[in-house]
Image (cartoon, rainbow, N blue to C red; front, side, top):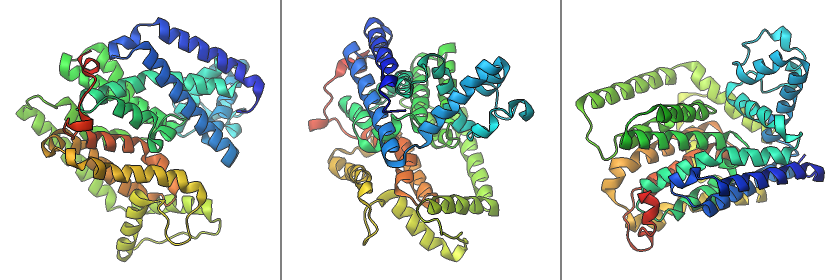
Length: 421
């Protein structure tokens, strides 16, 4: 797939066409980016996407990104067999069609039935119409398809912070704990794309009012974020904070917000008291434990074990893969490096911290991210999986922290024109 030289010709052709289109189009100027910057961002995203694919191929000889590509080929085969089957697989909800009519494809479609994962298959099936079956061409098209959302996200972050916009280039495109996972051909990139569209649309709605374009962009963002169903809920506090940022809040808006938060808390408490919720967590833990130890046995959760589970959740969610004793694997070294950078960020920038800005906007991103890290650490006891699941919220943790910094010294704003556009 990735190392088949004949498959690279379509990829190179698509890359050339996309670069030509970027340099010829004026679409990106409205977001405050030069054509050269957009080409550079696209190229860096593409390199991360190929690094993601190469890592999974060399280390695991496959992975979800290759499974998605293989299943998109099966959906494409349905087009040649019966266009109605293709339309059902591509556009209808999973299991909508009568299963008997899809028996030709069902054994080969392991992801069919999982709506969030199937979103990636749908996208790759559309790529397959013009890719000539080239996996590298799919990588190029995926990097280009997620480019507009990345630019919207960079624009949103630059507008709401007092630091040089190049910090956000580094956070999204250089910082390994985010860039590797959130630019690869996987659901994390879809999540970040959805967040980029949603937050940019909310900023436009707040500053210039609602329009059909803004509603459509916000709807698209929420749909993409549903590739992990809990992500809109995690980002809901930040979305509300952004919309009401730097503007008076009416009593009605406060009442609606408090009511909504109360309902979410009530639902969460009901779920937390149900046995099937805790059993689901244990099933998830057991599935990941068997990846490293096939003989792992199923745990039984008792309330007396909660201190131990919370300690383990804190370690896995915040500290892992910092080595304890002899359980550190050399392949965890990149994860250790990126995690160390994340833990060092508050210490390195604390002297520039502004409590008032944090309370106003930053806290609505920082606290959901920290709570999410704890939950993920509780459910997923594997360093690589924790790093992947955390990656989108790591980006918003960085945003929540940096948007609370004062524009002093090295953090002084240098690119006023970027914010003015």
